[in-house]
Length: 546
Image (tube, rainbow, N blue to C red):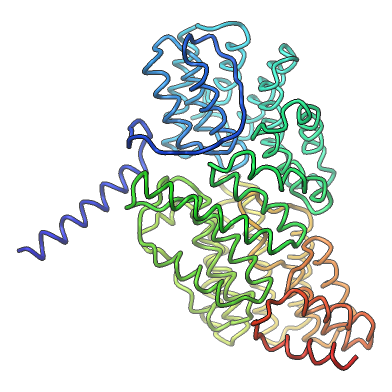
């Protein structure tokens, strides 16, 4: 009976955590020390609420939406006539650069926006903010997310134009612009427009968290990343209380192949997230920690530091705790991607084929695009290791997910899964001896991947399609072509260990000793001293022999 009571208590605790994590945020866990969040002044007409309101906005600028929503709810309780408090709740449930609001978020945000509109309080400027977010939530059951995001962008453009001296209006306008930028626009027109707005504000507000944060997002692209390096090295100092502010610089460090800085950034972020969750509810896990671990695994793998990468993957999948916010797709992405990365980056194909989707208690059906990453890993692993039944089953599931996402008009993720599906099909064809067909499909996957951009949630695809193409070409004895493809990968993802390794091997086989030495030296320079991958010995021998 005593043993049964303990088991029941544990089960009840888990259920309570799931309810608490997955349902609304209209509850208070007591005071939590959030630390320094930067300098924000968002002027409101709600008497006595100014300091708390500005701090809540600062939380939002670092995407600490969970805490921001709680803070705005507290302001609404303390100041019942403050319509802008409900604007804050509505804003905290709209995440322009993440994913469309889940059902619970949509419901809470819509109710708050409608309440703010109905109160008809505040001044003309505040009503403009309220009308903009209300336009996003209006008819949410009938109008698609992209259309409503464009409505919000139009609303914020009006607020910014009507209030040119209101820097917060300009900053939120820049964020709204970024929220509707197309991942297929390789001119980065909207991103450059947002950056122009933010760079004008930066000299006057160098410690504003949103300015630094959104500059990073504006330039989080291969051709632009170097322009955000100063913002990346500043943001964590501006808002060290936020796990996301500590993590966000690593977007630029990853783009530029600055692995030590990425590791430092995400180590600090993960630790801050753990301290935060211990204060809040130690029976939960923070998505911020999972997100940081995904980036840490990626960075350690680029240095061939496989032991550290493995320890982090093991830590992640062993944490059988509910996530603070079950609707957060960044947690789903990290859970799915990190184990796949660990297997594929090390070319452990049999390990990839045997991967299990974990944690088993996670609501994977809510995140089909993230589940697809798991099946992609199994498909590639199965095809490369000779486990063709596993590869075919995984490919079938990828096809189902891609079709469902396309039917839902989820264009971006349908396209991402199509890239994975083509790559998996290519390696199955290659394994079946259909070499020309395999190369055709693999090139189609690489070309499709070139037309789009990675989502802000990820450091990069589980493995770049063009890198897989280079590998397939090398296996076919097409060394010169393989070298071209590997070097193309490095123009987009400098410092990618496997792309450097492929380039070195291809150059050597093509008879280009100068390029081979260049890439082998780069490979040795990437790897940590204790790294023991087989190709490193070859690289060290080659370099020593020169």
